[in-house]
Amino acid sequence: MTMIYGTTTTPFPSPAAASPSSSVRARVPVGLPPRPLPPLRCASSSGMEPGAGTALYPLHRCKTIYLVRHAQGIHNVAGEKDFNAYKSHDLFDAQLTPLGWSQVDGLREHVKKSGLAKKIELVITSPLLRTMQTAVGVFGGENYTDGVNAPPLMVENAGHSGRRAVSSLNCPPFLAVETCREHLGVHPCDKRRSITEYRPLFPAIDFSLIENDEDVLWEPDVREANESVGLRGMKFIDWLWTREEKEIAIVSHSGFLYHTLNMYSKECHPTIRDEVGKHFANCELRSMVLVDRSMLGSDSPSFNYPGKIPAGLDLPSDVADEKHLEEAQKN
Image (cartoon, rainbow, N blue to C red):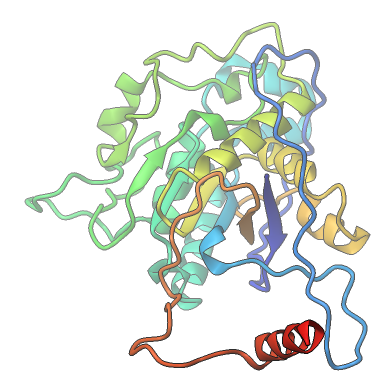
């Protein structure tokens, strides 16, 4: 079972976006997660009462993830004025607005100034135009220069952005993952293009994990249920343990992030639950800690040191007390 905990990193806010839509039946098969195990509690030996909400975990069973909702898209603007606009085919695979790109620039500056840009080892993005534009704009390299022996992350004017090409140098690798998409079905803005269309626009993004070229998950008359989105999100979080990276940025969508985090925050203190489970603003970043409590993908500890090098006598005093008591009882 994976647990998610908020960190002390301050979220990067941006203007609030349109409210998420309601949903109906789902057709996305997702396996149920195992039942949670109680966290390890450590009592105090100084006479102080232990904190009921305090838990202790080995560092190598933890990952830090940086969750980002995409910047403002044309569908957010249209949907704010008229909710029925979300059903318009004119909003198919919605791209970012000029304001959205300004939000991207603001978050990029924050990521650089905070030092976060140097920590992230992998950027995972939902394979829709607005999320890939956001991911590349925030976490990508500088402006691309012709003649460089490396493909750009994004070509010039990709998705009618009016933006210069973005380099894939001096930045983490980018991986497109279908599991972290928005609610599936009904809304054309949440339907993706074919991978064949995306590859020329985002040459350095890795699309190898996406099995189908066409969008076979989106259905015109069935909207994925909220519970299904949350379970899909838990499946995605469990999948992260198959990755060796410890610091991962994830660029996704309001509905996916909201319903996923709410699956993990049900047993938290109300203050923490509100912090973890509230809706994301456009281009908001929140940092969270993942804890592996069931050996889903924990690796060996890289910072631990075995000790006793060189070897020597090191009988702990508490063990010595036990041995002394055992000898006394024998006599």
